[in-house]
Image (cartoon, rainbow, N blue to C red):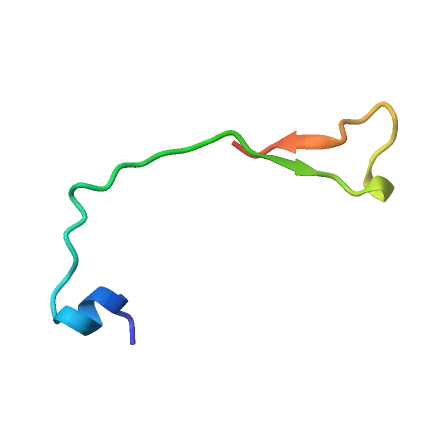
Length: 46
């Protein structure tokens, strides 16, 4: 099945016009084995 739960329940596509796109700044911590003192310990993912 390639339908959402809403479509399965109500037999129609959901209204999505009111939804907004949002974002935030995120970082990933690099493993200790993969970095040295001169390299960054985190990377920006946004």
